[in-house]
Length: 262
Image (cartoon, rainbow, N blue to C red; front, side, top):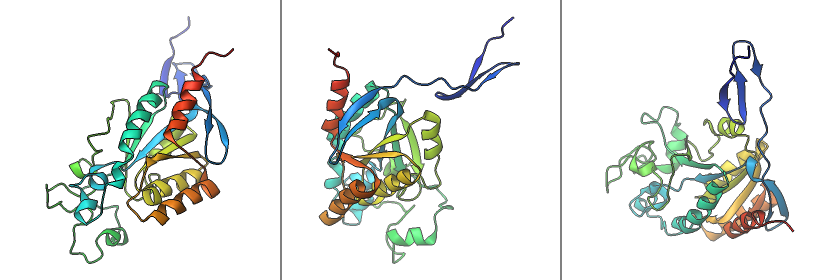
C-alpha cells in the first residue's frame, strides 16, 4: 500500500515525504522566458526565476512628515518612483514574480546597531537619529512596526508580498533575504526604491557578490543625493554589477511574451 506523500518546505525548494520515503528531487518550475532590452545588452531572462526588490519606499524617506524631511532633505525625488512602481508591480504579480519589500526597520532596543552607524545619522548626538521619536508625530525613526518604517500609503502591498526588515544600507546584511530568495529559486533580481546611490546600490552590490543577476529599474529608482551620485550609480551598475532598464521595457517584455507565436 502506497502511503500519501506530504510536502515539506517552500516550492521549488521542497521535499515530499512519508514514513518510508523522502523525495528530494525538487520538481522544476515551468520556465517563463522573456526578452528584455537594457541600456547595454538585450537580456533573455526567466520570470520563473525572477523577483523584484522594492527598497526603502517608506515614510521616513519618502513622506513630507518623515525623518529625511525633518532633517531638511527635499523628499520630492524620492516620491518619483511611486507611479511607475504601481504600474509595474501589478503586471509582475500577474506573472508570478514575487514582490519583496525591503524596509529599514530596526529592533526597538537597537542592540544590533553600532555607535558608528548611529553617528552617521546623528553626528552630534543632539539631533533626531535612529530610534528617536519624530517631533511631528512621535513615530520612532526607522523602527520596525512604526509609521516611520512603513511603506508609503500610495504603494499597495498585498498579502502575498514578502517583507524583510533590514538594519544597514544593504538588504542582505544580517537579514533572511538571501535565504528567502534561495528557497524561492529566484536568481534574477529587479531593483527599485531609494536612495539609489545608498541602500539600493549597496543591496545590489551584495546581490552581485552573492551570484544574483541584477537589473536596476531606472524610473522606479531615485535618490535625494546630488545628481552626480545618481550618474555614478548608473555608471557603476552598468560597468560592474549588472544592467539598467526602464519599467516600460519590462512591461513590453511581458506583453511580447504573451503574444501568440506565428
